[in-house]
Amino acid sequence: MSDDQQEQGRHTVPRREIMDPKDMTKWQKSSAYMEIVSFVEQLSKSVEGKRTSSRYPISPHVQGICQLLDQAESWIAEFPPDTSASSRFGNRAFRQWVARLEEQALRLLCELLPEKWHSAADELAPYLTMAFGNATRIDYGSGHELSFAMWLLCLCKIGFLEPADSVAMVLVVFAQYLRLCQQLQRTYKLEPAGSHGVWGLDDYQFLPFYFGSAQFIGTPTTPAAGIDARLVAEQGGEYMYLQAIGFIMDMKNGPFFEHSRQLYDISGVARWEKVNQGLGKMYKAEVLGKFPVVQHLVFGALLAISPLCG
Image 1 (tube, rainbow, N blue to C red):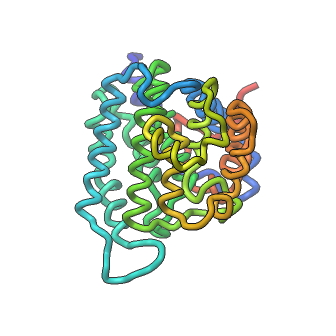
Image 2 (cartoon, helix red, strand yellow):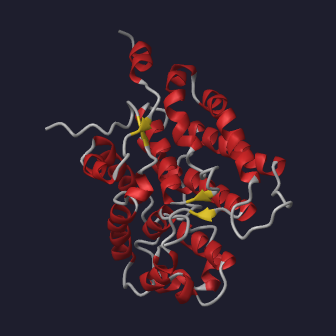
């Protein structure tokens, strides 16, 4: 059997498998869980000590993903916020933006992928369409961010992205994804999905802080400086952590220690290595380990919820 024939027979439309809290054990013992943990840790490791402007390879495939995200961003102008009904959260024009993404997902993927990988498009599409928020609830949270990470992992598993792309996956692709999500949050006033309020790491994101803390490892910058408004303004373009902190500062009023207690407490840790290790553990516990966050994840042939062998 040829590689292309094997490729054709490998894919399936992914579906939900975590339907009940009792399914969490199955999830946390699955091959998909272990692969996701390993993938996120490897991405974090790849950007240790690297600024956004550092030298690293940016492949044509990475550039293609950026073009896909550019197209998605361009639709925001086509669906301006609906001003006929005012509310603090949840502008319903976001539903039009998501509908466009769902309509165009297969086309976008087939334009992105060489023909030999087109058979994977049906399996990849749900991870992409779920990565920017929920149209019914008009919300966004770390579960949607996780879906984007799973999409990147699937692109790695089919061979479209390679280990050499790791740094660019974080500092180019994920950084652009983060900016797009922030624009969606601003434009459509997305409700934080499952927010822990003042005691959560952040209303919307987690991975920018995990990846961003790795960027600071080995630098003279201290965690205390990570919430300094001047440094945020000066270096936000170089460090994902600072960019994410800057977004919070723009969106929230009042003292930082009041509205972002977890991040404020992190600023008191002595070393970025310890911050990074702690955030890695927290991601497994508070994102991957929480039923409300992972219940909507889908699984297919590339990321299977079947148990590990052995």
